[in-house]
Length: 358
Ligand SMILES: NC(=O)c1ccc[n+]([C@@H]2O[C@H](COP(=O)([O-])OP(=O)(O)OC[C@H]3O[C@@H](n4cnc5c(N)ncnc54)[C@H](O)[C@@H]3O)[C@@H](O)[C@H]2O)c1
Image 1 (cartoon, helix red, strand yellow):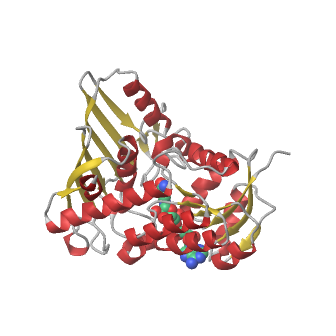
Image 2 (tube, protein in one colour):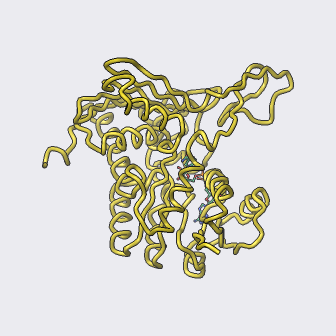
């Protein structure tokens, strides 16, 4: 039998389900050896949903990491725990997959990158947008010159608010919609431009009573950033928690010889009108009655399936992930999000401190 990557999955909620879906589609190279969540009932539901039988159960990640013979620890926990769990995993010589954002602070993210380096292990940053088939097709259209040189990109992820209780408090999550949602377009654009951004300016709603809608949330519920890249391209990045009707992942690209509009969430080939409603249409849709665009294979189209396969193949070969999916890329995305917050708070334009030094 070919060698399989042994995975310890930590967390058994929403994002763990997205990852499990990916694992269930590459059982030729993956074995889930253990799952850890402090709420073990979530582990049983997840295992039941994916027909998993032979796995160990833990409610304490320190014990799980110490006792599990695995190749990689996959962290699907609230943002503030990514750092501690990753350091624990590197201490035991495991590779790590971290959900986004890499951490809640740049200092924590830097420590994670450094711990991976010291342990001689890989830190993989789970940015699913980089595997969305529509986005990759769009990039190949650019590559063939069909819209000329891209000049301006508008990219957003927006929905009506995070389901996670941890997303309400900055200490637990690191910010509001920009760190939760905007980090996808930020990471996508950074990977496209090899992290070579030059300047940015941003605004946010400001959090709590300054928010437009979510006044109990410490982080902002609306944010936008204009960012420029070394090659002259400009981009407008937006994230908000004001969007009802389902999650919007939309990217518009304007080039010298054409333009492209990419809709990752509402581009289903199916248009359905239902009086009783469907069991599911798209992520975060509040209602499913009337006209809808039910997603055909949402997780594949958002990139999660190929993302997991990529990480597993990297683990098998003990190699780094592609640009945009390495620990250092997660760190750069978090740095940019934090500078977006700084720009918004202080009302200033920020230039990339790293490019200035070169
Ligand atoms: N890539 C994406 O599109 C995407 C989508 C959703 C969430 N995420 C990310 O995934 C991560 C998890 O978010 P979520 O929404 O799946 O779940 P969540 O934040 O609601 O909670 C995750 C799980 O962690 C468990 N947990 C909390 N503290 C624990 C501890 N100390 N030990 C063990 N288990 C503990 C909880 O019981 C829960 O089941 C976050 O970082 C989030 O940003 C990414």
